[in-house]
Image (cartoon, rainbow over all chains, first blue to last red; front, side, top):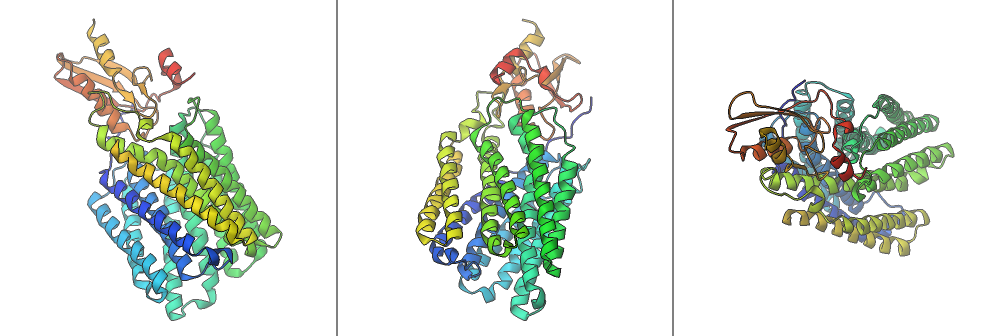
Length: 414
Length: 99
């Protein structure tokens, strides 16, 4: 029998602090989107209010959640303790100061956003350094290490390109490649960082939450190269301005994503749990959404209308695939964090609640339905340019976000 | 009641909080040994390597046995080989899983 390595739980305050700050960010981002409804509907995405909302949503919410989740999941999934918790708390402070001041300056004075941008970058670089130091200690790297490691590299590249853009705005350097850098920044930040990260952790969490056993991991060896080659090809196509190459790249990414969906379906077929819980099912549905959006991106490029559809598709990708995956998994991760903090020393001594008792799953259904309806409405309003559809839909989505945040915060009363 | 049965009885108080099934019915307990007087050695696994509940469940096993006056030392070894499989579950565990 092979003994395990000792387990390595992280101080609960670290992931929780990230998640708490992320709650403030998502509510702030939704309020900003609501205030700039007219501009969004008219396709004016590149204005200070939207920049601020987008960065608050992506850096303040999605990235903070991802960081918090990684501080918790990396040690347990890779059987390796976090390199330095103290460094983690410093990184939290730097990232929070950077992100919130960055969103502030993007809104009020984008020309002065360079320094907050650099502070944010330092915070993210500290996170990357922390993860690098942690992952290099892993005794046996595996395919998940490759997914998560590549995701971290993409995050690094995203930040580098983001700062290049800010420098370019201020000094004019690389201005002839500004659009290609901007597109690469968006692509690497969404499909490179978030998608590969969700892929990697899904391979850990899907079998765990469905209690699947006896499934093959072979398709993961094909998902990675196909998707990553597609991603790199897309970046090349931006710089050489080739629509044909972009179409090929989007096809490869669609195939890679479809292989991932197929692989997840194989894992789910081997589930032992008879009934999957709602938040987890929601996260699984978001995978299908991601696949559909990848298909739409490929078809748009094939028929020469990608420039018109890219904005709405990116918006839907962020919400229906990335945000909904994160929300679905958060419903599972946060109760676990709080349960560990409160009950891990009580288990075996007295009766303790189950994880499902930590959060009201009945409330999850209306939250998810409101989110889907709200975002479907927002997506429709972008395609038909209707403020009459945008505002009620965005209000519905904001309400769902408030309900979601309240449910997450309520866990700490259990 | 035999000592081993007493141990099993106490271990049944340790539930996997995600599944709500105790570690015995889940088939996580591979071995119960008494290498010396007042010592119990538990060899067990988890449903998956890298389970986030690793520390909690192994501590729970330890706590549940420390309550028995027969033991002064409780050792818990978590192993990954042989890997856990559903065939190790008891009929009661499978029933609770809805199968």
